[in-house]
Length: 455
Ligand SMILES: Cc1cc2nc3c(=O)[nH]c(=O)nc-3n(C[C@H](O)[C@H](O)[C@H](O)COP(=O)(O)OP(=O)(O)OC[C@H]3O[C@@H](n4cnc5c(N)ncnc54)[C@H](O)[C@@H]3O)c2cc1C
Image (cartoon, rainbow, N blue to C red; front, side, top):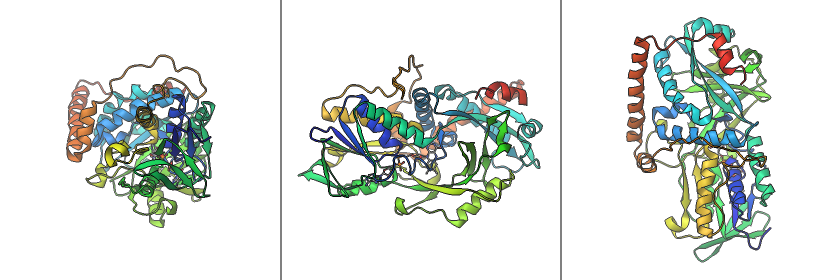
C-alpha cells in the first residue's frame, strides 16, 4: 500500500497498535511499521495490568481518574481478553502506611472503580488474611486490604488491535525499521526504511514509546522524555496464590519502605516487580542489574516462600514525558504533539507518555488530530466497536476530569500533589467518621469468595 497513503505509524507497541486501529476504523489508509515484532518491547515488559494507578492518587489524582475511565473502555472492547485480578495488600507492623491509611486510599479508589468495572475493596483481619493465603509470613501481620484490577496478555492486546486494523484496511509491517524521514522543505512527506525502501504518506505518526525522542531526533526535532526503567523477576505459576482456583495478586511494601512491588500470578508465569529507576541510555540496550534483581527477590521473599529458581527477568523503560519535578511525582500523562503548530514542520505528529491502561484514549486524541489535519476520516469508533467487530452497546456516562484543570496541574507538580492530598485528607476524615459509627466492618474468606468467586 502506498501512493495515496494517509498515515504511517511508527512503532508496534500498544500505543502504535491503538493508533493504527483508530485510524483504520475512521476509514483512513494507513501502514504501521515496527522494527522488530509487534508488542515485544515495553508493552510486553509491563506488569500486564489494566488499572487506574492506585499510587497516583497520592500525587496525580486526575491521571488515575482518566486511566480508570479508559480502562473501562478497554475492558468492554476486549471482552474475554482481560481477567479480573483480586490483589491483596497485606499490612505489617512497622509498614510506612498503616491499615487506616491504606483503607482510606482504597475508599478513594472505590469511587473510581465502577468506571473500570471494578468492585469495592474488602478489609480482612490478620487471621482471615492467613486463611486466604496460608503461605504469607504471619509475624507482625495486622491485616490486609483487597482491591481488583484487570490482567491482560499485552501482546494479545496488541495483536487484537492490529487484527482489527487489518480487517479495516490497514497494513502492518514487522521487521521494518524506520531509518530516516523524507522531507520536502519543512514538510515531512514519508519515511525511508533501513533496507532503503521509501514510503510516501501525508502524515507520519511517531508512536515509538521510549524511542520517541530518538525518532523525533531523526526529523531534527526535540521531544524530551524522562525514561524510568523497570525490571520484573519471572517465576513459574505459584499455586500458593490461588483461592478456590481464583488467582490472587499481591502488593507488597518493598525493602526500604519507599516503594511497592506486585506479585502477579497469571498467564504461564508469575511476575514480581517492577523496579523504577531513571534511565538515560539507549532503550535497545536495557539490562537488569544484579542489585535490582536482588532487591526484588528480597522484597518479595520477606513475605512469601518464593522458589530459588526463576525462569528469567524482563525489563522495559517507561516512556514518561520530560517534566520538571522530583522522580516521585512524575506524571504519567500523555501528550499528542502537533509538530506543525509547535515546530512548523507539517506532516508529523508525536504521541508520547501514557500507559497501557489508557492506550485507547491516547489513540483517540492522536486520531482526532490526524483526521483534522488530513481533512478526512470519520469520528472515533474504537470505544464503540469490540475487537471482534460486534457493538459495545450502551456505555455508562462518567464525567471526565476538567481539561483546563488537568492542563494547569500538569505544569505544577507540587500543586498537583496538593490537589491529590487534599482529596485524601477529606477521605481520611470520612473514613474515621465511618469507623466511629462502626461503618468499616472486616470481611471474611466467604465474603472474598462472594466478591471474586466469578473473577
Ligand atoms: C516495568 C514496567 C511496568 C509497567 N506496568 C504497566 C502496567 O501494569 N499497566 C500500565 O497501564 N502500564 C504499565 N507500564 C507502562 C506501559 O508498559 C507503557 O506505557 C506502554 O507499554 C508503552 O507502549 P508503547 O507502544 O508506547 O511502547 P513500546 O511497547 O516500547 O512500543 C514502541 C515500539 O516502537 C518500535 N520502534 C522503535 N524504534 C523504531 C523504528 N526506528 N522503526 C520502527 N519501529 C520502532 C519498538 O520496537 C517498539 O516495539 C509499565 C511500564 C514498565 C516499563
